[in-house]
Image 1: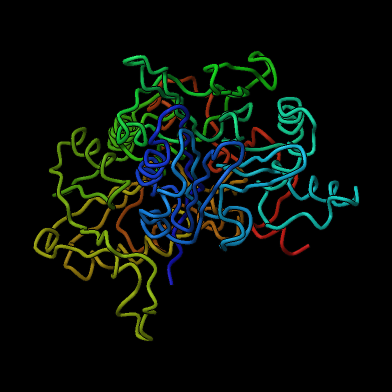
Image 2: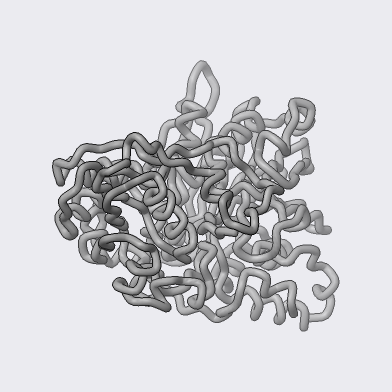
Length: 473
């Protein structure tokens, strides 16, 4: 079985419009690529919160009746891939707590690097020990906030206690709150629907702007690193966990390389444009004589277009993806004639037969999937196969919300480029340099997190353990 790299989560929230729940559903639907394990929505119901969540895709979890039951002027939603805590309904978000002080829901995109330590401290306080119902780091944030009598003071204390990556949405019976860590690892963007016919401005927050496009919401700006946005019946106001001068942005560059949808604006740049730039630079750094350039769909398509434009080699679609493949009970046959790769991707033989083919992929993580894809090209009759990768070799674990925490699983950590080339069975292999990758985006190089390539961590991890660390204690 092949194991592909997984994303973290997607967030959407909106306040001040009667169809807030329907818009949240659409916002999650647009961000389904960010997590396919579970989905959930919480909404304001007078002085309480209602919620529904379940395992599976957004369209599987919610029915018309469930959306109608949640109907409200304000809601937050979440799609999840597990980076801390296993995949089960208890860990699905938003998480909701109903304490003596208040009812509050939270949805989280990211990964805390000191969650095990914080949980141990809370458990040692005695009265918090039996209250943990999940094995996610998100629940720790929720209880740190909920135990304080003053919501905003509790929120600021909690956010100053946690370390790592967090883009958070909170919902109370009176307000929607968004918060982003001081490094701004994970994307979080603010949008609005302008005031109209006596209706006040409607404010929304999402992980990606593609969620706004589907809802006809205008992008306003990114939520700043270290910023807290509060939206209630009085409008919008901004506070901070720490001054902007003490926040040091380290935006995840992998969002541009792989995760985000090409039509989203992430960290201030259109993803499609960044990926085309990556492909152009890749063609200059690793030229090759070939008959066609083809992407690994879908995240490699924009980079392949840039490579083709810069090199003058014709662009072709040699791989066809089956977009209707989800989880399957079919296992590979003993002779390996039918793997997951073959179920999800097929090669157009007439396009590649007898041709010198340049394949552009976004990344190589474990190498298993890439090896199978290159084999498919050989079996279809490709004369030569040249693999080009639109980022540097991924050598180091990610502790900020991407599912490769174990360096032993990373092929570039274990093998040299020449060894990877032989392992994949390609005629040549070229990775984009770190310098050129950072030239493809608009902010200065020191504003991006490149830890998975460089090994330089903006926030040193305290818990260097796997995603299930909180359920094995």
